[in-house]
Amino acid sequence: MPLLLEMMLKEEYRMHVSYSSKTIFLALPMFICFIAFGMGISLTQLERNISIQELLTLTHVGIFLYGMSVGAFGFLGKTYIERRYGKNNYLINMPALLPLSFKRTFLGMYFRDVIFYIVLVLLPALLGLLLAAPIAHFSVISIGGVFIGTLLSFLIGVSFSFAVSVVYTRSVKAFIFVAFAFIALVIGSGVFDLYSIELLLPALAFQLSLPPLTAAYGSAAFYLGICVVVIVAFTALATLSVRESINGGKSHFKNVYPRYYNRFAFARSYQTLIAKEFVDLIRSGTIGKMVFSFVAPLVFLSFSTWYVNYGLAIPVGFNTVFYAAMVGFFGVLLYSWLTNVDLSDYYETLPVTVPKVIKSKLLTFSFLTIGISTAFVLAIATINGELRLLWLALPVLYVTSTYMVVATAYLTGLSPNSFLFNPEILVKFAVVSVLPDLGLTILSFSLSSTNVAAVLGIVLVLGILLISTLLFYRGIEEKWARTSFP
Image (cartoon, rainbow, N blue to C red; front, side, top):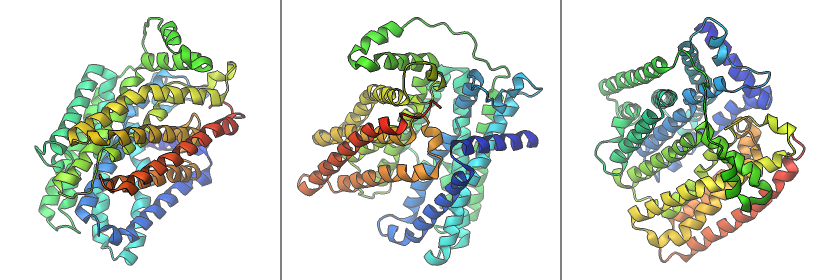
């Protein structure tokens, strides 16, 4: 295992460096360190509006979600095995050639990504907080406790996602059951307050037992043990569930392409490509993964905001307009899935260009998301009794969703999952996403029946986003016209 793990770490590093360069890739931890340092020295100001306990709660939820996004090894491993990547191959495929087991290589992927992202993200964040400690008067013990707690949340997220993704490779029905059970548990805590969030995320209970909040070390040790058991249990379940013989198998599909081709006749020159996108989505089974990756963060977002408003009794003002903006920004997740359904290098032999394929995926994104997004915002408005805000919330949803996906396509083309590891592109992405998101969030908090200024501010932001969307869309042709397919 040590040799296999070492080789997998080298493989991961070389893959990321190939997206940009060694210098740019190594700049990412420095960027994260700088962000953590900035947040650390501004924590005193932040505590005027939100307590340290509330901040830690939201941080742990965010880290857990990040771990879930990292841990989908079952999805990725099966994809690596089923696809051909030209001259490249992955170590996950080696059991077909060498005396290795798939269980061992999948476990190697687990340890590889845990180590890789701890070193790449969590340790630089820890260093940033330590550098901010003398300025913000932090206790090193408290920082250590926060790091261990967030590390546990990350590992729980990774191991849970690993287990769920492997379940998907064994049974789609079992995967759907687990996904809905997970969502039901979140709703039971966040909406109906049947149990505390610590029951779902024991790492948070561990964190709340340590400084700077309390010093209940006995309780912390108890929750630490629970966290270790949960992590080991999910990891063991996932590893034992991996099939020892993984292959694409034989699949038979009806010829549905003509149906989709006729359905999208209105798309004119994009008709052929959009029809192909939908056929690929159906045959690859990606739609279920996309829906889960889109709905799960929204459910967690709803849970977090509900918990802040009602569980912590903080009247922050999360309303339907705020949710609409967040739904729009989460749409980027679906675009990344669309670019990862199949390899695109074979387009080199066809009379199409990179910009045309990008734009066809943008249209496909619109057709896929408009219904789900609208339904979610309508449900939030109904639950919160804010149907009166739909006239503003729905335009916010549609504009932010279109803006974010077009901006992402402009910056990353057909490879968002790789280009966003380039710190230069990541900084640009942060600017084009965080600034409007922050503006809409602040304005939505100020929204009331008498605050006309907030409404006018939101309308102004939407106008700026529409103009920016048009500029980004036109820029796709110029930026990507001379590039080859990845």
